[in-house]
Image (cartoon, rainbow, N blue to C red; front, top):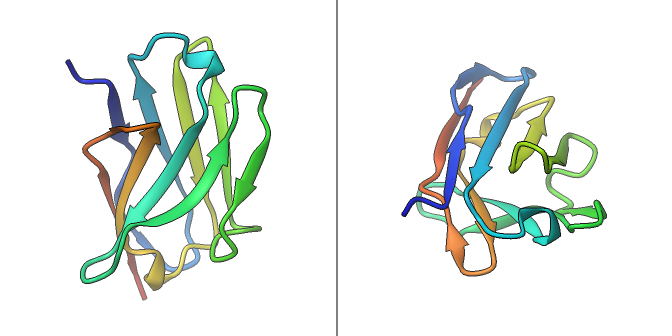
Length: 111
């Protein structure tokens, strides 16, 4: 069964904002540590952000100050708010919990 479903990817101009969502059908979601990654063509998958069950967060230097991870345990959903987007943010964005991955959502930032 589908366990992580990302949405919210789009084409946006540089300087714009997007909010990605990841709907989870996982047991004990509120206790799970959730992560966001991205993968651009020709590049390795890059870790972006983490949020623990207790709400602690951390970010990769490449997105710190621009991206914000959050969660709504009542909706079993984790979010990635992305501001001040740059063309180099263009990638497929993935939600992750342990060894479970979503299918990804495409973000394209035009210059």
